[in-house]
Amino acid sequence: MPVTTAPAALLALYDREMRRGARPDGPDAVVERVGRVVRRTAPAHGWNGIEWSGFVSAREADEAIAGQIAHYTSRGLPFEWKLYAHDEPADLGERLSAAGFTAGPDETPMAAETDALTLTDSVPDGIRVVPVTDAAGVDQVAEVHERAFGDDASRFSRRLLDALTTTPDTVAAVLALAGDVPVGAARVELTPGTSFAGLWGGGTVPEWRGRGIYRALVTHRARIAAARGHRVLHVDASPRSRPILRGLGFAPLTVTTPYVYEPPR
Image (tube, rainbow, N blue to C red; front, side, top):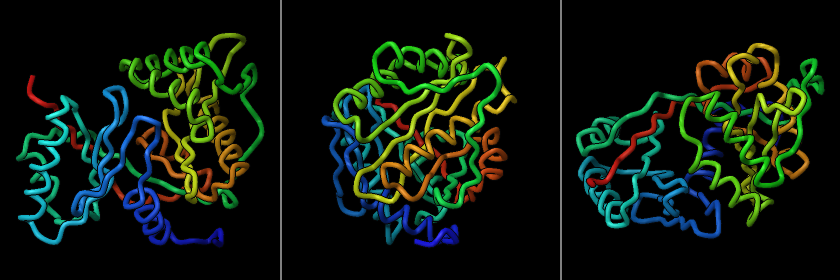
């Protein structure tokens, strides 16, 4: 694949390999194609949701929405319908809202071929980047996550430790340390048999932002992905990270919105 692949072609490849061809991300996760929906069902601390849908009519969409609500509700699981701007029908987001889903903030999926990235091996003064290999490291990643994003990291940290323990070929995590203090963290998810590696959870604690830590963490993860044979990096970029990623060579592909359904208590 040439390093000049257009964003539209990368999006088509992503739809084919990562959405329609989604694979389990852990030993207890199940990916199924049910009609024109690809869904992932995992334990409560895992990610549960709809990876892809391709409806040919509004009626088919409504029936599928009801079916997925029944599937996850019967298991007592909240789930996410990850809606992409090019998904059909065009009013699918409105139909999800009408069915009881809550829309989260939009994100911008971006992608880049590893050979086309502008990377640097430099790290900010006083910072070292180290791999995460054990529960103590996962605890430090969770500490950064909570300070950087302001939300609870207990489910995420359990999922990361599970992956590092049972399927270490599918994930790698890194920490940025100032001395022995964790100030940045991130992970890369590597999907065997695909072109893609996903950058997730990249965060820096507030007092260390603006010094190049996020860029250094992207570089480290890009090198891990390339060494393991993944040619394309993808990331759901926030407004804060988009300019940095553009500078490194990432291009926006589309817009995605998470629609979350909470089962009645």
